[in-house]
Image (cartoon, rainbow, N blue to C red):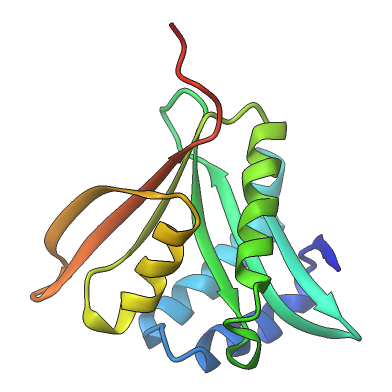
Length: 160
């Protein structure tokens, strides 16, 4: 079901992401750049990307990577589930996979960013329901009235 992302997946991932109704055109452009960079070089730098595929159809995906200049902190940069699959537990399964994958890479902390707008209430509830805590809230980060919300989850106990 989960497999590494291939270059041929790019168009399907952009379409899936657009169809969720959560992402702006500028974010879709950024996703294309992220995937192009991933296949060109970032995969070799430790970035990780996986798609959930069933019956030849991509139902969801995730892109995560170590946070530069940190001690084993990772980011989930992209996670999305096809609109017709939302609410069925697939997002939770993908997130659990990421958490284990980051642990396997000796990661200790996982961060996820999202928007503060009301449109993202379901997204924020999803992260809270899956054991993430609100770590930061930066008002007006993306634009006036659209702040940055950062969730975190410790994956291994703190040292000492």
